[in-house]
Length: 307
Image 1 (cartoon, helix red, strand yellow):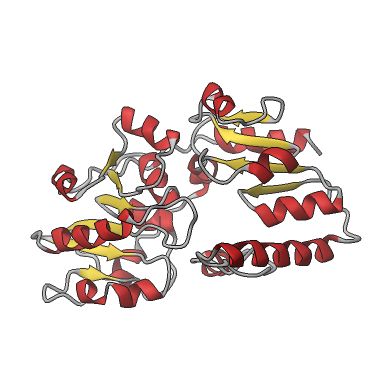
Image 2 (tube, rainbow, N blue to C red):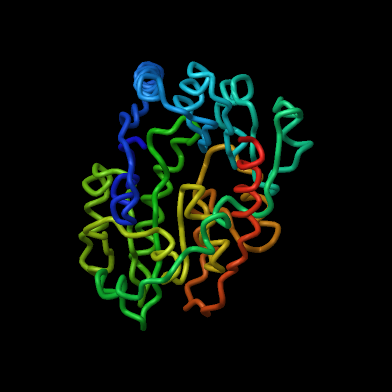
């Protein structure tokens, strides 16, 4: 793992053993190349002499480079087609994508047909069957069941695939949400500096913005929220998979996965200040979650078949 966002905190929360290799390089392009090369070298040294049959990563460039250097066949998983994908296309042994991405669309974007494989459902459906809700989160965060709980997560500010307009929109969104009555906003920043950046809104006179003091499981936050507004991909799709109304403020090239979810009525895009009127503030009707293990078993069987 690398030290980025809440990765380490979530691993420790779940009691999962891990070995740390580097951190996110930030937005600077030179730093991205340099730190990824350093991380690749460290992974390579760690892997020497180990009996590794196959590597599985979700969009890790250093992981795929280290695998190539070690002579280990690699499976690269992905659910966003507009990332910088040259290394994935050229160095991976297999590419494994959600079937929400249409094969013909990927072929037009230059993805090699001989490497492409698909699993059913969203990436989030792989792990959703193992989720166990923890109602204690409501007490930890001080959530009021009588109010509409809005889960808000800003866009990434250092990823290559995002757009600056996302950062302007979050301020308009904060102002709009704070002006609403009978709501609580659970703000989950991606980075520590975002707490300071948006402190004016967090500390507003209505006192209706909650920032978790420690790492909380994303699925749990989504489950106990009435609606989700996020600039990222994973939390949006978790919400769609969990039947929680979700609004995307992602302003980069639109993912086909999200466009398909929009067609199904499971996600709405907010592209401008005027679009804020689309948001429907109402209590969510709790429903049973899809606990099918079809996605999980499909991915697991694919990996096993390549070992």
